[in-house]
Length: 87
Image 1 (cartoon, rainbow, N blue to C red):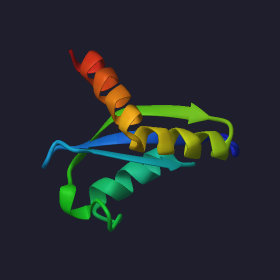
Image 2: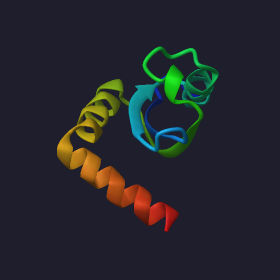
Image 3: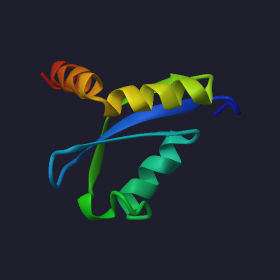
Image 4: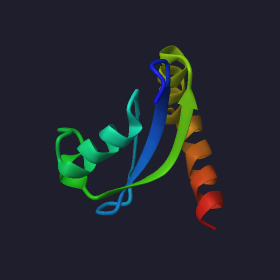
């Protein structure tokens, strides 16, 4: 992993089928933290499946994409994208 890589990621809870959106500089570690119950906001929704991620060279871009994915239009975009990937 390069020092200037950031990821925006989307997890799907296999417990309640809802999406969780976040960003990180270490995707593998963050995914493990979510599934190990180390993240307070998701610990009761485990296990998770990684359904989408994007790599960016700039933290601000990842944060901006995270905000978009959490908006109404962003959620619509993600639902179409994830449905297309799985179907």
